[in-house]
Length: 305
Image 1 (cartoon, rainbow, N blue to C red):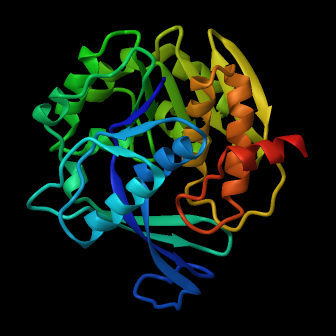
Image 2: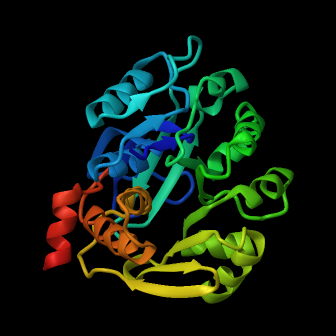
């Protein structure tokens, strides 16, 4: 059975809801605040809730935040490949959600920022596994090169999924030049695709991405409430979204990515998997917090309405 092998970073989010961000030096009161496990956990939880076994290959810390992260992963049934790091705790992200649903993040990297060749040496992917790579990982000095070296040794039949995130904004770094030919699935939101390619429209961004990626690569670019665009071999299809009342967009893209991969692993076509992913993202934005992906039954229910 297929698995999702997640190589990214699980961190703990301090999630706060407020009307609007204060000006520099200002102060506001939040309507709510809570600690939630987030980062790469969001994608893994979405995949698990939709029937896909998941293994977390990243590190986790030895402290209060590491304890929270492990408890959340174990509660979702995520297999944890590494032992806790002895000298660091798991990192923290302050996640601020305004009334407009716009999000602002301030992160501090902890144990999850490190990963060695020795950590990965014992990992043996199966032929139908999906290996998930976060763009954040490429920015971490203690992790990027070891992860890239491992990815480039994987047999071609192992599917590599790449999520650039908001901080990887160009295809010409040495790490990206090496990784791009090995990417089988690209998943991002529209602004990330535009920033990475420098294009002015999503149509242009999809065309530019195809020039950077292998010919057979599958591209999925989310377009907010409008749904997403799916492209392969030059064929582009728009998959419509679902109309809902959004309260928090935090984790919606991760829900989309996790449910999309679960759909592919279950034998769905990219368009069918994207429709399920759109439904999951729509439900996710109606809920507060990072890991708000629905499960299979909830997705099914929205699809049949």
